[in-house]
Image (cartoon, rainbow, N blue to C red):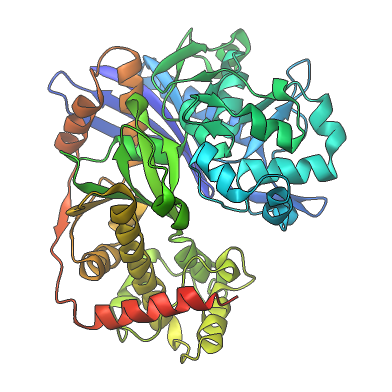
Length: 491
């Protein structure tokens, strides 16, 4: 029995997951520790409380000791956010959170220095206002002294890897989320960095998923009770770990890593960078075994999470309650564009949905059930739209969709996705990110051979639910409305 410890840190919570891989290639996972995560406001800006997150990881390691030491430890986090270190390796303040408003106008400002078309050809990354590139543009404008006095820039998982091992490196899947990685040169893009006017020395050596980075420092061992346990660079971008664990065979599939965001894409041995991918704002992020995740970011269950938060004053609704309300609600009440900027971080998500409907000439949903149903149906329509774009850009015919991550538990969304896209949908595993993290560690230690072997283990270790598409009927009309709204650019 091989034991591994995964830390999976998301924008709302973090978990320590223990994985035990038997000789029969069945992986058993169990949650050792769970802890909250949220943005904190400091000086009018949103940040991540990274010292507390490190302390929670220490606690997860202490709890893990009771069953015996793991063979390795791996950490995955969200992308784009970073920390700066000084010349003594000390962290310089709390990392900014990607939802902070400091990047407003940064895309337009950077475009005056480098045309966005040229930027895309060099990186293959979709333009999102919170990308690391645009965060650094804002930092160079607002805090140039901090940038020029820093010695290193580390993405979030890279930061924790460094704090646990003393080794600073940039893991490949996270590096590709920065908008500063050039897939043709297989390294940092010096021209973009020069255009930003930030120091080149900030950027560290890029290492692949499945690399043993180093062992726990003496300080970390004293803090946790563990011995000289190695830290492996897994697919440190959480979506990269989730995609690694997609239980698929062949190449004719798309995946949706469903959580706060819906990351929908295909896997490719090479980046897909062409006129169609640029027009559709498709991104190329790194994956395991030198693959690329050709995908788009879609505003996912954030809409549901924020509706739930807005209704907390009435009572504490569970997600199953909200899905039940939506199942009983009238279908196709209205259509929204989930990627409208007004849904990024509104004071009240239900109000934002209602306002969008009014601005687009639609009757707003009535009650909780209709509101949730409108959000979920619109997500399913966004999947259909993205599927069409992926097929055009890649030249592939996509015949099935795998939904992984926490959102795969949402039976209504999975059924709506099948109906909206006309494709068979396979939902699960819900723990794809942790499974991918654990099994890439197993690759690093030699227990798992390659990516196909990893996926066979994922298929044999989890329950998958299949959804057949139903009658297209009203979905075709709803999709026409969805496209109209996209073209209207409602804000």
